[in-house]
Length: 168
Image (cartoon, rainbow, N blue to C red; front, side, top):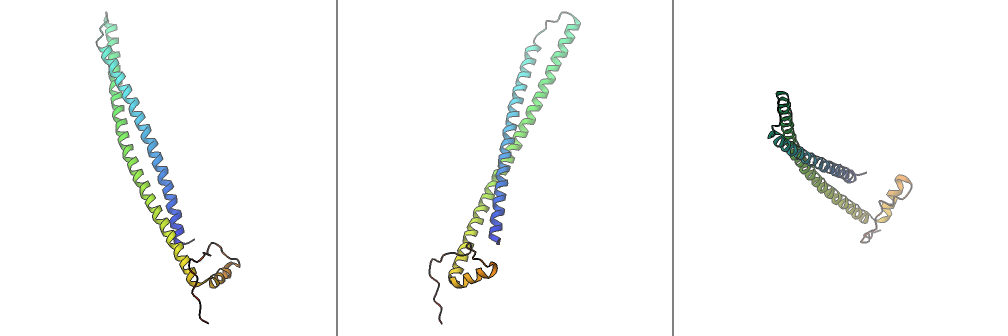
């Protein structure tokens, strides 16, 4: 395997890995956005409950009043925790967006490298074909048969122009 073939195989592997990373970043972003939405719903509902319950004063005795205060306090803590969770989910979504942008950039760079490696491989094959035509078929066949005892058809490329005639 020559240098161009190795480079092409490596570029293909890296492109696949970049695409996998990009898909994983998209999935993580979707999960972060879903968590942000759920957190916003919980925060909104808990604040709504706190406002609705905070205005009530049905308590007739001290025990009921104390119980209502504890419940109202618990609702306030729930609302505060829901707001913190929403802030964390929003920060996570921002981070995931940045990670997705990096993954997309990496995938684009790998695509460009793959295209360059493919172009180099084509150029290498064209050079090999030109060398083959310049060498002439008998010499090329003899060289191919020397190494393995069989003709390596991968190396034999038909010439676009006939080989130059040799002088006796």
